[in-house]
Length: 156
Image (cartoon, rainbow, N blue to C red; front, side, top):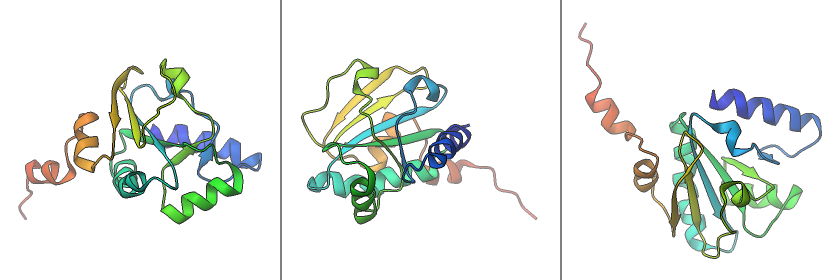
């Protein structure tokens, strides 16, 4: 479901010449049924840069979670794509700040991460750099290693 929504949004935007990996939105309401992690980052923010691999892993390895990034400085177009490439950002970046959709003000501390639950409600506001472990806890996910260890083993 996550990929279907993102694919259709990205496909329609790519047809309009929008740079790959950036979207104007989905509305938070469009992502109901899954966890949404909205991370505010900046190119000059060292803790932001350090947590990008954690956010990439969460987005890549946990299909029930969608990670969306917001460039704090409002970069767009080629400038945003250049920063994303330089920092290794692979999760989707939003061009429009979704804070208002969540009834929040723009963060004043970086990095800041909003966690939206599957019902579309703001579940947490995390300040400072996050680890995959802290993000999994905030989104109520079971770490992949733990899930693999508890999976039934098939004997041949």
